[in-house]
Every structure is written in C-alpha cells, then in structure tokens.
Image (cartoon, rainbow, N blue to C red; front, side, top):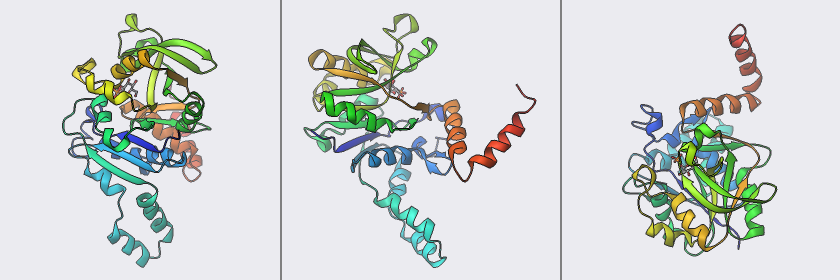
Length: 290
Ligand code: G1P
C-alpha cells in the first residue's frame, strides 16, 4: 500500500495576509525567490510522489501558470544564453503531474479535501497544507511515509504548541505508544486553552486512508462555520486506528505575517548565495538593539 498521490489544498482566501492577497493567491507569495507552494510541491516530489492534485478556487490561476511551461520565456532565455535559468524554469513545469480541481465555494479544509475524492479513489494519500513549511534534516513528509509504511493507517503530523496558541490548531489527545508516535483517541478543532485535551497541535501534513471521504461527506460545519478535516478525523479515529506523529524539524506558518517573516529570514540564512552577506547585514542591523 504505497502512497502515490498527494493533495495540496490551495483554495483559501488568505485573509490573514491581506492586502497582499487581494489580487494574488497566498500560495504564490515568494519565500525568497520561489512561491510558497513550490516548496510544498518539491517536498512531495522528493518523496517519490508524482501525482499531485492542487485544490484551487477563484483567483488562483497564477498557480497553474507557475507549474506550466512558458514558451515565450523559454525562447527568450535560450536566445540570451541563460541556460541555467532555462533549466530551472523547465524543471518547474515537468517535475510532477499536477492536476487541478476547483473548490467552488470556500467551505473549509474538509470540503476542499472532499473535492479530491474522485482523483484519489480507493488509495491512501498525502495532504499537505500550503501554509506549513517544515525545515529540518529530513523532510516531514518522508518521516510520515515511513511511519505509514509501518502502521498502514492514518498518520497526522503533530507538534507541541504553547497553551496560548492551541486555538489556532486542531489538537489531538491520545497515548504516546512509542517515542514520537501517538495512538489518537480524539481530536478537537481550535479549542479554547481551557478545553484543549493536550498541547499537541496538528500540523499541515497528513497521510489519510480513503475512508475519510465517507466521514467528510457526513461532516457538518464546525469551527468557523467551515467543514473541518479535523471533525471527520475525529469520527474516523473511532472506527479505525489514527496515529499522531511528532515529526522532527522546524515548522513555519507561512500564512501568518510573523511566521512568513521567520521563514524568509531562516531560509535566506541557509542559502549559500545569500546566507553570509545576509547574516552580516542582520548582525550590523541588530547591534545595539534589543
Ligand atoms: C488547519 C487545520 C488545523 C491545523 C492547521 C495547521 O487550520 O484545520 O487543524 O492545526 O491547519 O496549520 P487553518 O490554519 O487552515 O485554520
């Protein structure tokens, strides 16, 4: 039971990032020189998954253009002998089989995932949320696929979050059955701190079994009036095993202004071309400041 398909929900309105997202998809905001969604697609491809479904919506056409060929630009780069750029531009359009479906109304993450049903069929699949960038020695999705290969059941990425922030996340409860792996008993979407069953917050990476679609279909609007994936997983967890996995790595919420800034700075510091001069710049800037 290998995971061969991935779903990237990218239909959200990006209200946390207005006004930048008024006329462009939040998934296309650049982290240095690549749009956020390209990092996610690259993570999927690096894990050996080649079929990707991006759930889009109105105003998201720039995503399709980005992963398509651009013959005029290729012609220009070839004519100007910019081979390096040419290769990079072509690679973006050929690295995966990217499919698209539109979520016609903004009805929440659960509804967006349900839009993938006929593409997925009866196989397990990965879901990666475009806002969550995870950096570390090993790709987050690769770690999760390894756990999935062993447990052959739903695996949800989790990380410990501060109590004051539990209401931004889906929160799991369950028992840690071995280091980093939890048998999930329950999930709550965006609880108040006093109602949170733990501090383990769901992060935007999931390996799901196709049974989730049946539960998504039955799910009524929950937190924020939206159809929540967390609510369907809560019911699924009563019917079959669901595991939480505390991945290693640092996660950035690139859909939030501060998270986006942190991701930009840390990714820039890691880059061979930009890291050293950017470090010098930051050091000088911060001297004398607290
Ligand atoms: C979504 C999920 C939530 C999860 C979060 C991770 O919420 O509904 O369970 O913890 O992503 O980023 P959103 O951030 O879209 O409101």
